[in-house]
Image 1 (cartoon, rainbow, N blue to C red):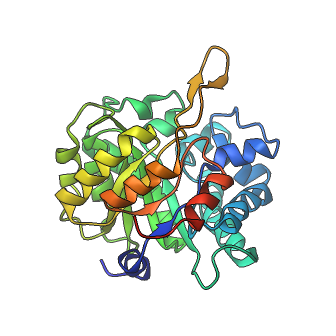
Image 2: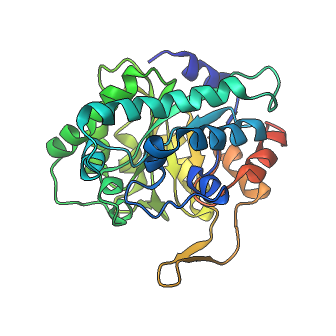
Length: 304
């Protein structure tokens, strides 16, 4: 699929934002809700706009919307009907657009892009199953879950749909079917463990699913350990011939019992150079990667 965003990827590396949730938490927001950052779409959308703005002003070319955990089913559990849920999904795109309009600093002369997040089925469950996959649902059931939300997000006219944190190939097939005919390009990004998806499938097989998908303009990995990125990027580029997106976590580990992060960040400039050398065209961060890290990527030379 030809698009302005696809052309931008082809013409030069782009910088993606970092973790939205950690930026919101740093601003004092409690995200201990099943809706996670999507709760603020209803309660405090201005906070989301400010979080996006921080990343644009750190030098990001692309920000990802707050719709990762925003689903009709999840909103319904909070007593929010389908019509209002659709409005909030569209608002996630508009909030990012508003941040782009407000940005006064960043990388001069660069267009600012909005990627509408569509998280996996497991994100709606809010039980960590997006890191396991294999929900017990068939491809058809997963496609029926994803399609209505993707239709609403596409109607809001983002530059690209971010099909992200995908744990297994069944869900990837469902998402690839669900984006057909929407008229908006997409990237497909797996969460991985080593050289396999979280559900254990070889990455060669996983990426091959998107090789001939016209709607998919980039493939890659996110929400994984920084050390798992280089090999995955190389595999994605070789198997699909498409631009590659990479935005891992910081490398710190969540201690669920203590409800605290442990360890140190492993997200380093050296690794970013490795990812670009392996073929990554769109690089940023996910959980625990903040504006300072994005600023360092944006200020680094574009060549590997």
